[in-house]
Length: 183
Image (cartoon, rainbow, N blue to C red):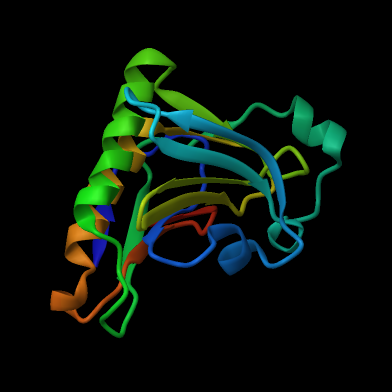
């Protein structure tokens, strides 16, 4: 099923899931936590910037990437997938807390954020209780993505990829494969 969402700032993968540890499940054991903070009006959503060496594409030097303007992928289309079989998915209400935190940050910090594809961090992950979501930049250059687009995608995937749909979370992969969003 194809769904178009306005994607904010940096192109990165967002996924909603109930995986034990997002960084190990996606990045592998060689992932590096670059920063951690708490976002939202109540500061109850953990936001982590990660570097996943095994998922970084090579082709540009660090200097070239640092000097390149990020490609804005807000509003880009993506293809959604639900993970089967049923069982173990996130609580959609807990995922909605993350979506609300992203909307709050959009209004108070800025609508767009950047995700690099070097040691500067190619993934941003967020967690609130059972819900974990991430945006992964799979491109050769920095991406910019809209926080409100990420929030909308979380609010769509979390309730529509549950046990009643024989699923346990899902993702949305950019039509051009530059980013993935998991929820």
